[in-house]
Length: 274
Image (spheres, rainbow, N blue to C red):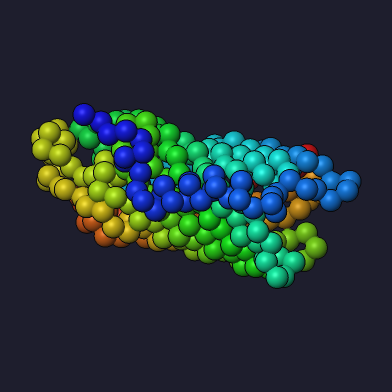
């Protein structure tokens, strides 16, 4: 019998979500007060192409066309691609750029189709997942750090993940900005087994050895984004990314025998800011 959503969420995730909800009542200093003359809405719309592995752990690459949509309302509710969130608690620090924010998240994670790559034949499909969770971020000047925790509530991979990240913004001129971020992702055994494990039936169909994947840090990586503001509204962004698969995920036959621990990505995007 499937557990209820609450019973499947870790204490850390429940604490993050509970703190987010309580903070909206307990603290008077809330987001939403905009400077005079500034619009309540910040919208970026565009798209581009991204070269990335066919699946997590693959050494085959594909070019994927990706729409870009980012919406921010009064620094309270935001939509960043497949992620919807809310800054229900915002606390200003001693400096003008020191900000602590906490809130809930909803995220859609793409699944995996065994027809995406010949190396996946016999592994079956993994449906796209609806994940719920929370985040906490702290920014000071050009530096930022955060923790995001998400759990599948749609019976797709049934897993839970936590991502630690740290980022930096560097102005290279009046129109050029370099953004860098390092991150590490921990996943429980449900997630790692779904994406990296090989069951007995999958082993028979795919020809790979049976493999049981356990929880642990599954990857660490770095991303570099170079933003060029062509006009006040139009921007072009180039991206370079590298991710190293770790732990039980790296030991999977999907990675060791048929893929690679080294995962690269690069892309170019054009966007318009309303």
